[in-house]
Image (cartoon, rainbow, N blue to C red; front, side):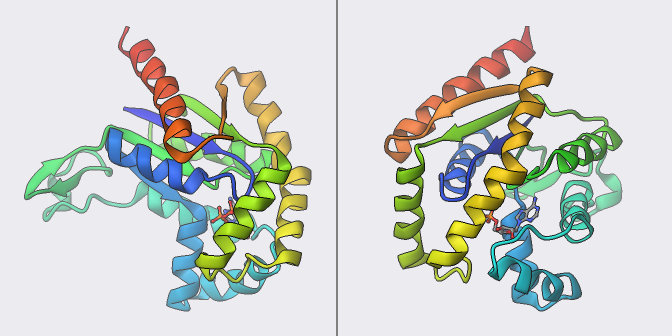
Length: 216
Ligand code: ADP
């Protein structure tokens, strides 16, 4: 089991990369942005509170996002008989009980306080974060990618003004999380300026090294 946080500015492509890695390594993929968008689409009480905040590009409060993440991490097994499962992450795949090889979290933490919360949530599950990969591109390329995505995403927060605000929020609140993880020795940076498969290969090399290290 290996637990990874994938970290990066809005538009860097962390959702795409997290999805590719989850498929390749059989990880549970948890995206707080997706969890929030699902709640908004459902019109749940949490979703209704999150909607306007997300539309203006602000970070939603921990009282909204932490319960969603915690539920997703601690959810009971989806095996037909959850009581038979020994681990809450156990799943059914092709009719067989199946345990994923780990988990990859994207979109969380976005503040230093959320980084501390994540440690607490993992410790409750007797797990810990093994690796934080920060994917990085130059700001002008980032803005180009967000605009490209905006043309197809239909996301309410992909408009010019909101994009600027999201990047500002990232610089102010999320960037300091990098220093937090650098100090703890978990951080590895990966250049994401190339095409999707190039970045994916770089990420795989980092993950393979971490897996090898864990097996020793
Ligand atoms: P992006 O990385 O492009 O900003 P996400 O899908 O990760 O996209 O997040 C979309 C929005 O969801 C954010 O702008 C924010 O409003 C909200 N959000 C997601 N994760 C968090 C979080 N950990 N804390 C607070 N707000 C969050």
